[in-house]
Image (cartoon, rainbow, N blue to C red):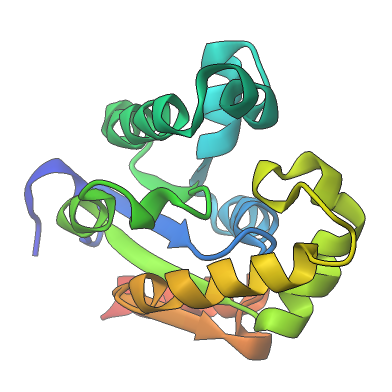
Length: 185
């Protein structure tokens, strides 16, 4: 049934899918590929924030602090409603559902979908790129332990998502199948 402000609907009414999950879960890569294959629009919130701030997320956190970054993230999230594209996949940052009322807001304006390929896969994906991730800075020996602790702390929040794709289902084909099933229901 159609609802206000882009709730999950079928046909001409907007469908907004917000991908949530830990950094390295594949939200940007999988979301972009699925959007292309389905003919949906795609937004990466980190890219939106970086473009607006004319700075990387890392630089933004270093110069303005995490609190200011989280406010900018929340603003970018709310601005997804201004996108004129009727069917949209939004890749959120790993912390988006964990701050403010963001997860409730997401579920009021679309559908939250938790991508969780599992900790071992996430760790492998993060290893070569961790120097670009502000939350993973520090000692080479402890980054994985710190990241796993953060992943485990956020897991209950992620698990409150409307839909879940876990393990090998947290893939482009899994997301496409899930969204096609959602639109057919």
